[in-house]
Length: 112
Image (tube, rainbow, N blue to C red; front, side, top):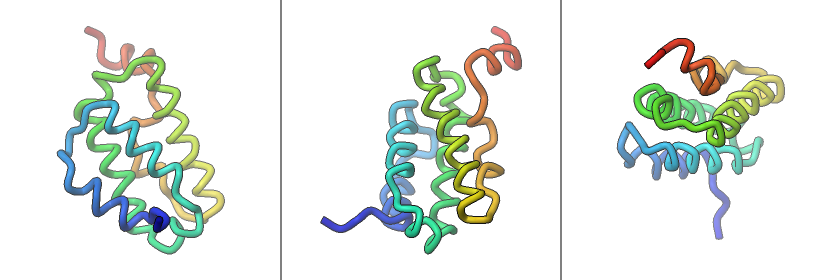
């Protein structure tokens, strides 16, 4: 089996709807976190595009579907991106706007 790379992952996820159900968003996050750091460094453009796919979906739908159980994955993903910034020496979290927000923070910003 061929190892997954950012480009291969992007080729698959770019064919999916822009607004994904939360479980698909979390699946994409898991797929991204499984990527090898060396492969990410070789194809930063595809990796950034993947981050932006998650962010767009999260901003459109994920923030409304997210549960406290889900927030551990989204906030953890954001923190993982911050750690990758140090490893890769480039900003990544700037492409993940809103993924660091918890359910409580979202409720304060958007009361129902």
